[in-house]
Figure 1 (cartoon, rainbow, N blue to C red):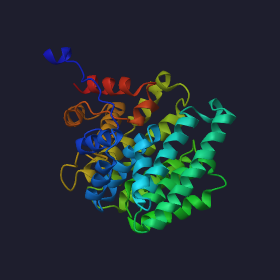
Figure 2 (tube, one colour):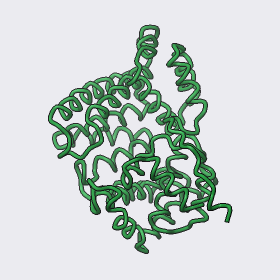
Figure 3 (spheres, one colour):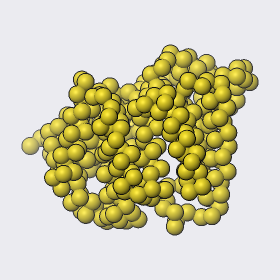
Figure 4 (cartoon, rainbow, N blue to C red):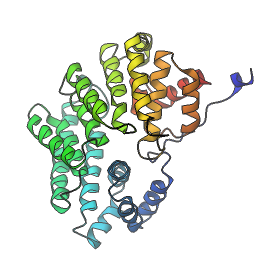
Length: 327
């Protein structure tokens, strides 16, 4: 009974989520100590998924406040990490310029600025490739840059995909971008999107984050088919889709394989994937107790979990709704 009166946690919307080392290093960099960011990335080594997530968050910080990155580049002009962060900062600015509205609700000027900044990001990505050829992440940013004009840049998208997976076959960021590029609202179809999600999920070893990509494909499908511009107004129809037995079976199979190598870590993509699973369970009205356990692991860390925005106008509203259902 007392559980009815519990309040959901106040969402922590820091993009760094549960990676407290990353948050500390980023904040120090923003205060002028760029070496803190350099040391963090160097210490991450060849953990490509963790490295990619940290580069993404640092790139967002550089997109909003580039002074520390400028100082780093002046001190170490040939550091490949600087080039990656420059590309990430430009892609963050490109995303801000375009906005999150559907194409018909985006102006010509917004598209033009999105294209301009994406082209600059592509050049910075190429510089990062030249400085560190073994790193898959510059190719991830190159894939992201093709979203500005995917009809003309499909060959570039495919080439960048090939380069990245050659370096890291189950790189989460790479396959995430492939699902995005190939979804119907960008440059593909439902069939192409589900293939881009399911094929690496099936081939990857247990514990790999890519095993959870089919959940994103289901979110994208429901968003497109059941009210792209209405969000919450069509929530009932979207939830009905998730309650189909075959969808629930795939959710369970993805979760079982993801957890098959032990409890997935919280840092890197661990928090976001727990949010995905909690959201999918809520929509399917499935495994309330398991979702409650997931949310206990998540705690307040929301960060930017865009999947909630597929079903509610505000991410925090979605997080609170799922939390209340589970608790």
